[in-house]
Length: 134
Length: 144
Image (cartoon, rainbow over all chains, first blue to last red):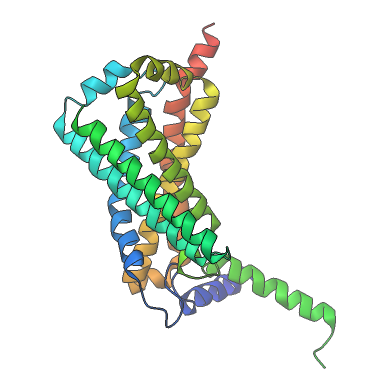
């Protein structure tokens, strides 16, 4: 019984389109490519960032002095800057795609995307400014 | 004409069970990762936003930054951070799986195995990280 069920499952998986594949006949857009490329970098950068900042650095024992000493390392600052900009880009484009797929009214949808974009740009500018001028 | 209703219902159940386990979630490209991937992505994005605000705070008001981080040391905050790490790891690994499935046909034919590997590695990374993250709060609790 189990074997038959697994076989059916495998066959179904093989015959269905891949999980993130666009629907049949639907072209892969620039946003799809951007999400994939940034996502591959972020799959390494963000867990690494979290391990260094929150786990190894112990978020509860961190103070301003910890951040100052961490930012003495220019390489770390560069990695943080790249990771944050990529993450904000990835997040904005992914949420934008979700919003465009949603059933919200056209005007509400467009304004939400604009507001989200402005927030992401402001956050990115804040991050870069903080890292460069630290 | 279409047979007994009981038989139809039974057949539908079996079909649904097979499809749920093996087939990718329904929906267009944006929802292809399923609800957990979307939740993981949203939580990861929230972490990035939190970190940028934290970074701005350390520059503008270091005293408030220090006070906020003392709060992050309590057990409840550490549990939240543990959940966030789980979301980040799962979202990252699931994203890599989706990219590999798209580009390597062999992996695409074994999507169920790939999903299982993602879940296994997520827990294999997450569980030790949770212990390291939560242990200081537990130690402090018992040393009172």
